Length: 118
Image 1: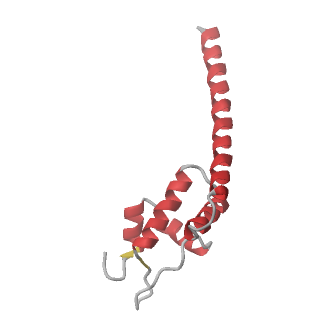
Image 2: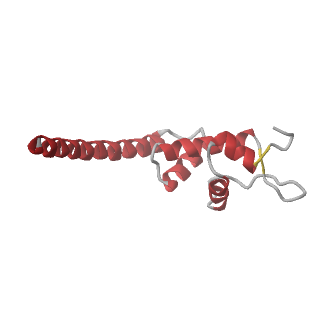
Image 3: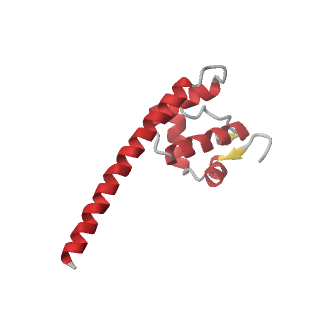
């Protein structure tokens, strides 16, 4: 990492988030606009990389963009109550439980089909 930080390509490599997606996150305000070189190239500092890692992890957990936006606001204001973050996480957990129930029912139906055709 240089004094300015890392390029968008290096940020993409380090975070596992593709460069166009990083630009999109910047465009919609999830990532603050990073400083730029004289040539106009973005350079991400450690804080920007941590924020990018947080966004990527939240997306892997299935959080929607607006939920991530709220979580980032809460992360930026640590003096606030964790109630909102807990509610967002709980809502996602309910969605996951519903999906698991649906997949379990699907699995049982497929097993019945296979057993009946055997």
